Amino acid sequence: MFFSAAIGSGHHQAQRAVALALKAKGVPIEDQQLEALDYMNALERGMGVDLYTFELKYAPWLYRAFYNSTDRGQVWNHAVEFMFRQGQRRFEPELLTFRPDVVVSSFWAPTAVAGRIREVNKLKFLNALVVTDYRVHLHWARREADLLLVAAEETREQMLKRGIPAERVVVTGIPISPVFRELQQADQAALRDKHGLKPEVPLILLSAGGTGVYRSLRVVLRELGNLGQRVQVVVPGSRAGAGIEQLGGATLHHLDFTPDFPELLAASDLVVGKAGGLTVAEATALGVPMVVFDPIPGQEEHNADFLARHGAGLYVRNLRDLRRAVRRALNADDHAELSRAALALGRVDAADRVANAILKTLEVRA
Image (cartoon, rainbow, N blue to C red; front, side):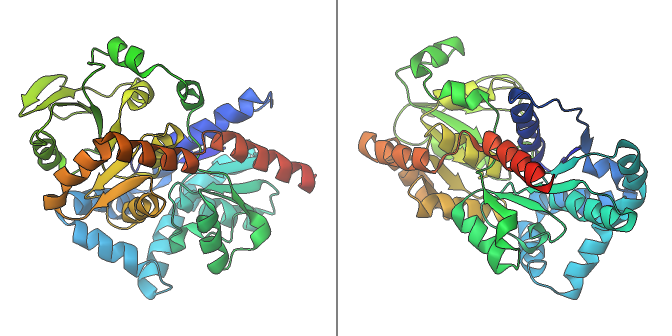
């Protein structure tokens, strides 16, 4: 069973990459792709998903307070745990019917629920959790998990400090689609030509997430239009609809949701915007630097800090510094240095590493 959560698109992409990696290894799997939110009632969805979306759009400070307060073992944190476990009643019959050998979750709540059902019903499946950010929030430190697959060595150290036994934590990287391996050696000019982009003009990919709540989207686009140099900007999943817009020196290519995102990323010189875990994993796998501005409070701020500390990107905290940072990242010498650091961080084979860890654990348990 593969469990994701429709809170952004990264959770689903991660677990799908693991399923593809297992199948590519010739493992005869019969998998179910499940959505965790389908097992929540209206109150749970309202308090979990709808409130999260509202906070990101209108009150990011409130979400930051939530993130920080639930990162400690307080009463409020226990209330959140209780709420997310209420999906257990709906999920239990399905788990008992399918009786999987492995449950792979890319969101923390299904791991907790599956662990509780396993304990009550004396089941024996492997409960695995894929962590899709670079820093461990308390909710991700699941003692119900037999296997925790994490992004980096420092993520592993954070798990250990949270009390997770060392033998359960494996550094794999965040799993991404196998197409990124194929694109590592792609001809950038050919990709730009394929998608109607100019090979000679710097190309920036806007990272605005899949939820449509990136509050700084127009602010960032305006700054990119005032860099003092010509650039092309690809805006995937644009709320403006598909089309081309000229904004100062920036030619904006607004796109609907497109399966061509990996090729567009490989064709780009730079990613600017949010710092979702999957976006960071994909960009670093291809050696594309990031300039992060106004990320989601909490997890994405830590992702941005991770990039900046390792020299693979720039974390801009003030709007007045954004143009300077983008120009620096496009400068040939600085860009080459950032790109090298990004490649050093990237784990294009992360899905394979996750699959190997799962298979090895199953073999040991057998």
